[in-house]
Image (cartoon, rainbow, N blue to C red; front, side):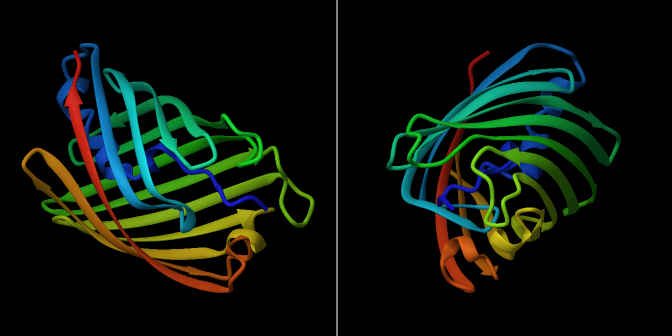
Length: 227
């Protein structure tokens, strides 16, 4: 099993809440918006799985109403990971639902194989308190230790102010390889940058070669408007 275990774009460090928040300014007026992002992570940990350390990343997003599409890329040491995604998020007064498709590709075949998945999202907020849900089903070209290639991923995130806690769990053929995890972190804005610090505790993930592992990381993210 290779060390790169995908991720959802809502997830690519930004998280579901931050992804949907980016639509609030453009979804109502149905104007095309193009934005960019760039950042660096002390450790690239995605859905509880450690990818690489000191990772630079960036991407471009297009939004029109509730529809979105984009590309995100990261230097993972052995070449580049690039993620292609698109979907639709519908916002209510204090809630949202969404569906998307994400493809994960790599410039170096030795690093990992391709992933393709369907992502379902939902969430609600009340003041500073918010709950985000994700359910994903996908297919992995490399296959898992039991010989299967289908996976599922379920996550629930609670947010209050800048603090958040996430529980994620792998299912289907990936359940024995990936296990589950908790992530606790805090995000704040400083000088136009978004700073995040978090601790991730992974349980029974055989792909890590250890039954349990706890890891901390920090990330710096910059988002900017292009159009």
